[in-house]
Length: 370
Image 1: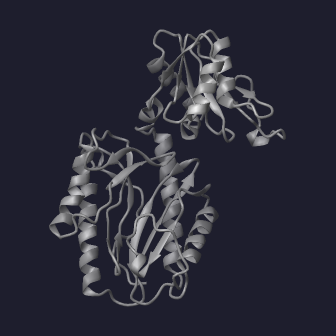
Image 2: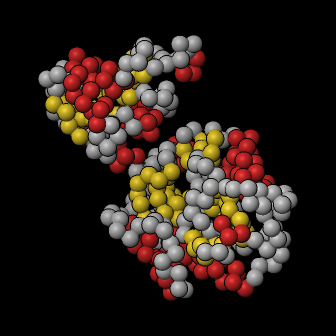
Image 3: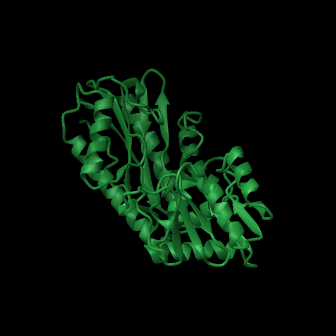
């Protein structure tokens, strides 16, 4: 992947420093990983104006996988720090020594105190805001990234499928969430993509529900939301089931409405579609069924090195989808005191000529009675 990371840094350099005098200081962890690969916690990346890029951080003295890389790894060298030296401040010193006239920093990530410390060290160098240039570059995924997302989705589907074959009645939300996360790791995940949510009974359908000691009971709705992290890339799946018995009429009706909303949003995922048009496709279905206020602030969001990247599929979102952009589609309805339904998938935007949106999470969306 070193060649891929080097190419990404070159694109960023060309965009930010066409005159060859701007160095770029990247501090947001996901952006550092995107441009440099694995790095120790707190490391920053200096994309030099002259093509000399430096990864600055505190490495494990024992070396190994977390040890400093070779002096020249496709244009990237490592600078290992001692003591409590701030990596961003040390990188600013390197930028000054390299003769940079401007240092672009991620003001949306640096604290005020760190920004001041960088400015104090970068004497004679003008500080500029990099804004979200790296995040915008991360928006469209290459095939290596999409391949990692596919594996993450396969692991997630497998872990969820195994859980569905086990006895669920009497087990707590918390226990089921822990078991799912263990299964993700057993099947090759680096870890969960986000805290696993298991919700049953009156908790079901709540977005981001934190598992409790409530036990699964006959007749409950059970909603599960989880995802695997593989090589840093994260996916998301959410499913709703009925426990033990045939679903009641209200459960079938609610499930069909959410399923129709999810399908409408998935079908709207075409290159050139407005972000807010995808959101509206789901909201219109829910509104027609009397659940217009039940959907949260977003119908979906981008995924990759983070859950919740750009784009946001929301009513006020500006922009249009491009091909090879992975997103979630995750509508849900929660009825207070009764429970609810969530159906989440991870997909990659593809043109109709390429078969339309590529569904990565393939666990059935049939309303199963477990």
